[in-house]
Length: 356
Ligand code: AMP
Ligand code: MG
Image 1 (cartoon, rainbow, N blue to C red):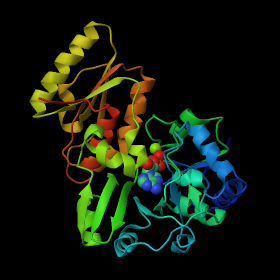
Image 2 (spheres, rainbow, N blue to C red; image 1 turned 90 degrees about the horizontal axis):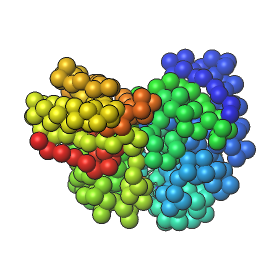
Image 3 (tube, rainbow, N blue to C red; image 1 turned 45 degrees about the vertical axis):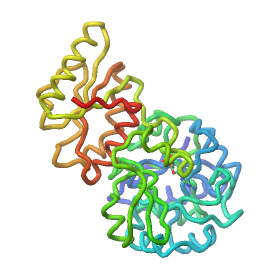
Image 4 (cartoon, rainbow, N blue to C red; image 1 turned 90 degrees about the vertical axis):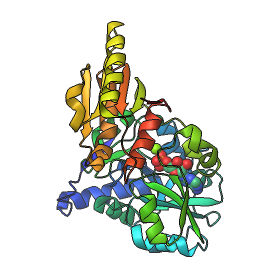
């Protein structure tokens, strides 16, 4: 696997230009190359080349009925792959692209490999807000299909090291662009005349979508568990039905007043430790002092949920590295990016949410 480093704050050096040339040539030749975006690292390939797409599925161990997001670097790459779309979708593109918003659009038949869309008549498209990603996609000259660059079922990669952990030896190249700024996967929406449906919550919130689209936002109940949201989302966004983001240890999410939450968690953790289990907690900075465990990981301050979003997946991977067998996490408020954060925490916990 070829490895290039392109720091986001110093990406116009001769080394960076050579890296983009080499990585884009690999993509054009049917290679699979992981690259940074503002959300998480993606595992990219030429979306038109079915063999390359199949290699992405194989490297990840991804179920074949779970379609991939197509990444573009400019509006002109959109027209060849989609059919006429709603005015609502156009408004969202104008407001949020480049950015962490994926829009499910009517697919032009045969424009990308049928393996990318998993046979659906729609295609999910995004333009990432990341200079290196945009330059790589533009240099490749083809639409780039890219799921998150992790083994299926593992937490998404927010650093190049996470990609190496999961995919070393299984992919052709990796562009290291430093840690991801957002840290959670993109918001995925359907945008029709008169409504927007959230298929996967992300850092772009329902309120922001409603304001930009000028219409009602429906679908994903904020912070809903898979069991609650799966019913609606499964047929529309196949990926939502799979277990995701899970650490190896068994995780429980605990909601309630801070003292009640720490009381519940510490009682459970002490019992688990007495049985010889390795314990971990995932907590706010403000309440970290109330906890004792083999690993006490602080996600960030309650007043800055975006920090927690950025660090969540790294924390889940750290629990695995430390061999933590039982994990408890404090629930976060659902405002703003908190909704997406709680969606991922709920998935990581396999739906186990305790209200105290
Ligand atoms: P990932 O890129 O691994 O974070 O996953 C992409 C997400 O987008 C999954 O939840 C997919 O099911 C969803 N997705 C991709 N293409 C479509 C599509 N055409 N319609 C609905 N959802 C899609
Ligand atoms: Mg993924």
